[in-house]
Image 1 (cartoon, rainbow, N blue to C red):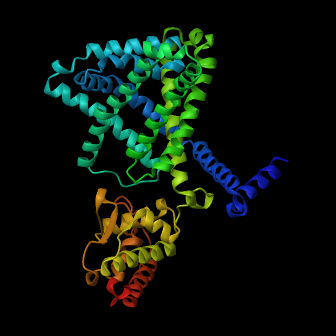
Image 2: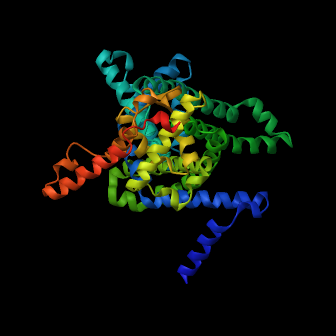
Image 3: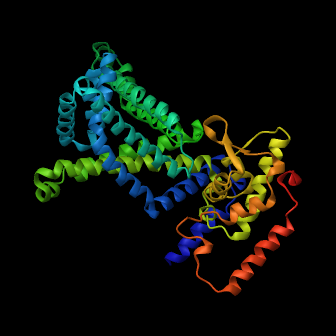
Length: 436
């Protein structure tokens, strides 16, 4: 019975053509496919493991991050908004959230950045940067990105997030608090229909601010160009999950007496760590939704297969080199990982295996903004077909295990040598320029 339902659901999900339905039905079908792909990733367990790793890094970096943020906010005269904003983030923890917030603020007050010294300040910044690096790594994993930013790009981008991000976040929290406590607002509230309108605005403003924050995170952190529409789509879903799960967490976990009975004085810490884990899982879920919204061709189960046969690797390597060389020779637009994946109809994860081999053998080089564009690393006459095939056939080999390390008989060695010589002789006179 369950198998029949599953088969009918999968048939509806993948065999139904969006073009056969109206606009609303087509978008609902696409949303269903995106949620299916996101749940498939969550069931695989890797997003959960990433979220667990971020919990540990967050605990180590939270106080240093807030200390740096406090110093930045103090320069703008907005440091008094740190505690209200932190309490707002800890709202799902209920009364325990206020206790955790006050304890964290006391740690921040005790950590005076001005008296740390040069070495202490450097260690403080390194601790904060490690948190942002780990966040970027989790986002890049969600977006199937293997190429990371160089050290200079990381430093500039991370510093922007660390300095500007808290300023925007806590300023927004201050505006919200001022909105709720202003005497002018109180006077307007007493007048209808302004009172109902202001009440509605007061309820929806936290959602809007959270959506804006998530949208900026999904655009800025991954090492790729994220479309605003896709980031907004993931941000809206993540915000709804954040509010819904926060309410459920507060109702069923925080008010539960079981944690206090079992863990006693450690109950607050356990609940705090659990909420950090859930929060990161929600953030990564939103990132996954953004990824599949921007890359609908990666939703199907077929796109998850990254095992490449020898024949497929060789054909992909020759195809990639021909496309890149042809564009270079004719002064056309350069290729990126995304455009190559779209052209070859192969997933970016699978293509990365081939591209990494070509890069490591000095056949390709990265250039352009944020090193995303591929060009031949040498003249087309100097790149032979033999070099391309040798590079791809040795892909993913490690010094610890090479073909020469295998103990075999002479007859096998002779056959391997014959095969190698045959390939070399067949294409010995051909270069990459001959394929352009």
